[in-house]
Length: 398
Figure 1 (cartoon, rainbow, N blue to C red):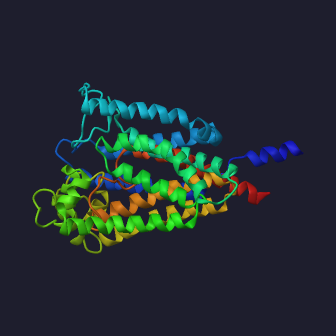
Figure 2 (cartoon, one colour):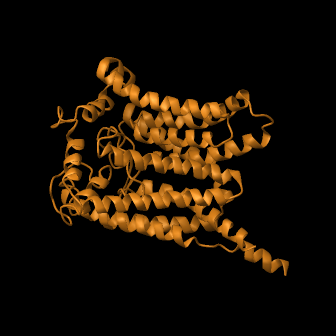
């Protein structure tokens, strides 16, 4: 009898509502990428990226199924191996950028950024996308182990935790920043801050973190208005400063740095309630299948279409929160907090940057923008989420 009960406890319970939301995101992604085809750059038109996105989704579902069978504990214990493999891959990218020009068949810069490996016949592989997921799993381990041995809630204990996290997070952050890439490091930093906020550190740190984020955001605007040379020095000049100009002085740089934002605003602002029509070519803009996929949805389906996407991703995020709140063990909850930090930041920034609330940073819309690396990377923590949901259901049944 006890053996039967044990087998029942171990039965995997598929979360149907989470699966449905994931399928809806897939359908939205395929439709949006298909609608983006007519306004893509000439070399991408007719390449059927929406079919490739479908292949990536199928591959992601297979990976998801494998990881749930593989075992969640093995993911947490074996994550260090993936961390060091990705560190080597990131280091090789910097070697190509700053030291030795590797063959284009292996590494090829895109828009001035050396962040991708070329995989013949399949596409590209971006190590930083996987590193951001590996880091939240590793840091969940670190926080859990730290709290198990913590004897008091003090600033000294918090500093010990920050040091442990920093040793793991700062090296890959530096490598990714030097590619140069600003978007992924921002995503990683935000996810780590969210995890630390729920880790049990003193509340003063949370308030300080929120204060620094607000001051940093408005400080950029004030420095741009009154001390642009200082801001340029802080940002390292170059493309980062040009993006600030394109954001805050869009119309002045309408034919250069502000062109992407201007065309996005024109597209969404004129789309009305139902959009300009299915696959209608109103205006072309760069990267419609990735960074500006939300603009494509607005152009084709208007306010109703964009609202449906916002509701869908909100439902998905709330589902993750509900699963985390019902789960009893802390380690997985820390991980899901980091995942939510990533998702919410990417969602808010991506939709905000195409309507001018934030500068354009190259941050994509998770599960909807075209891209295999981002898709597959998120399937890793999703496997843990499905496991948590199964455990919640098993506990309620008994």
